[in-house]
Image 1 (cartoon, helix red, strand yellow):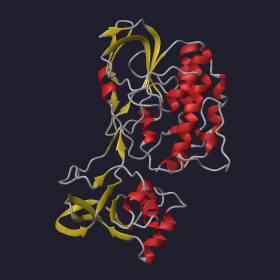
Image 2 (image 1 turned 120 degrees about the vertical axis):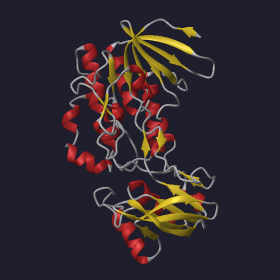
Image 3 (image 1 turned 90 degrees about the vertical axis):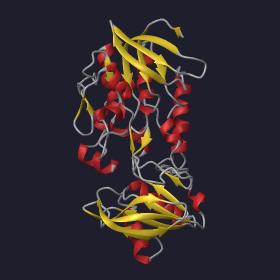
Image 4 (image 1 turned 135 degrees about the horizontal axis):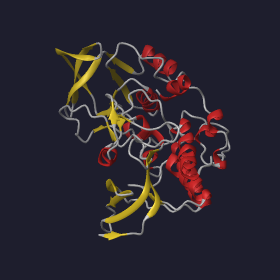
Length: 359
């Protein structure tokens, strides 16, 4: 194991907000170490192909660098990854990708970080640490028999995979609605299983829901309301009837299908927060932090991006309303708001709109 010289600050996570903070610190002349367990913007790399953001480009842009395109509309995940690469290139940001942090401990006047790259374990020291690790590390599992069969997935990759095959989609929010419409238009025979009787208009985008309801009414997309899967086999799914979203024992029905797509959401990995001693509160395990500086209850440990919201059930934090985190942390460290961010709070919508946009 090798140990490097101490750093003034370490950023863990190279998603959009982590990169935005790196630009702010680099411009301010603050030396830092930047680590990510995967490639930059890793979460976006497993988005479905050609999926557009719900947010507009001006709300996704980071560090004062506009997102240019030839259609003036919403961009895809692939386009955003290209944009993030361009920002890293423009500011020549040093990022240790594919170097996961396995341990984070507060000791003495700073922190010890242990990483596990393929070349062998490394150890670093940093006076301050910023966790910008996001909140979508792994899917919410149903923990039912058959969930790990090869024809079952929590990740929607490409509608083409389901051409002329039967597909059961489990879920009732944006991801399920968009997957159902795209797969049906790509030639799949689609059915949706949802634990509620009807879809919630506050949790599906206003341009998706009417289209989905129209296809269900026309019979082109099947709908099994008030059902949840309780077991999956190679040939069919056992579904239980529900009451108030909960399965009713002894009410199962069989649905024959070729593929199963579980759009059940994702959750973050809070292991590093726990190791460092961050206090987590409530059923959503929301970290304790100072909203003026983003510093957690652990002195010198800051939170940037969606990690600050804990295990989000109804999303309140995502890229477009986390830009100010980079500014707050930079100001806490340097004493000045970064010029690259401008007047970030004035460019964000109110919380009510943000909650609607996220769900």
